[in-house]
Length: 216
Image (tube, rainbow, N blue to C red; front, side, top):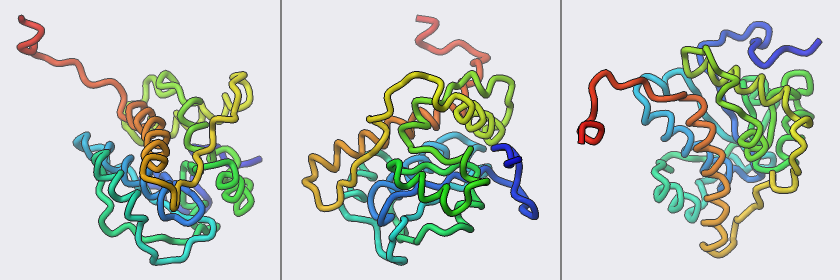
């Protein structure tokens, strides 16, 4: 029996929910997604401390800085590219993640090959996970990390049963492409990242006092 998405690896202490983004060189798609999700979670007080978001590349050259075009687009989206350096995807990184999100199917498959039992129910493409997650899967979960684990379980159970075509799940590599193309890719990344952040954070708490707009 394979571990459930909420179960820790044997011997691993779980103090955070860990998200790992994966692309090829870890220069554009995965660091952009990593830093954007980090920014969105950090915008909610008390949330970002329960998460560890990172990225890696299947053929990355360790220590290579983030692609300048991706860094520019990330800043436009409200993220911080400082200190983003490439690293190679390893079995240890996969097994230290509660959710692995590949830029394309090849990246999800690479993670599953490295650790089939661990990654099979935890690895998705980014856009696949974005369309499979349902906020209601986390109904009743109080903490963001608890909500995230519930969202992974729901998406894993739903995969292959929603009848949705999957030819739009991959995000093409924009490395070296014109800025216009890179911006389109950034938008395809930002869309599911925003959905994930919103689902993890959950609905805002009810305001105890009416706002100026509600009293107008």
